Length: 197
Ligand code: K1U
Ligand code: ZN
Image (cartoon, rainbow, N blue to C red; front, side, top):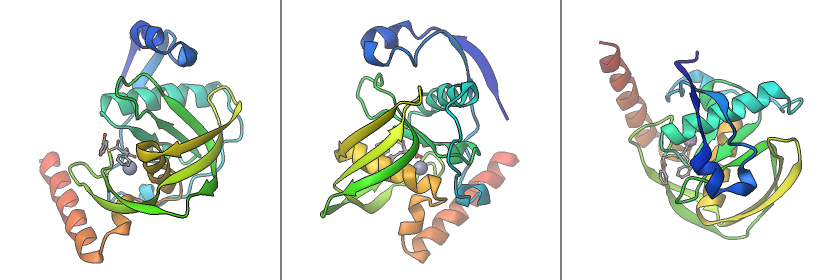
């Protein structure tokens, strides 16, 4: 499954984000293949992470590396064919504020919603509007197994909702009309056939 394995020095990011420096040490990281819609694996419901151990910490590093390389703002374990409740996010402009959410639970949602333009690394090139809560509170374990609460608004709130949907086996195109969804499915399958030629 692993396409590339290499060693990176994360000194620049570590300097910018001392709070998160424990994530960015000299570690071996790998780029993981991202599943593409309509792969049926994207519809599997993820199970809770049983323990935040070395295997999970390696997965966190690999998912962060994969997300940064793909220029995404989030990535759910489901998208890399791992069906455990783990999400990585970085909505910062500098790309130096990674968030790790293990076994995330939404504890509060705002009364108001908003239509947001979304994209998805599993549906490349497709962007469309999805109605999301304006603000959410989420509790989750971090990469050290420490329980955290995040109070999210704006892009972070949208991204958390998008990624938590992935863990439930839901891709954002499922909010769109059947007509749009079928067009997207056809386009993705055609692109896959052309890539294979
Ligand atoms: O889960 C994913 O596939 C990552 C996805 C997250 C996301 C983007 C936009 C709204 C909600 C969730 C992406 O990172 S798509 C690519 C991207 O960087 C992006 C697209 C639109 C707006 C902002 C960023
Ligand atoms: Zn997505």
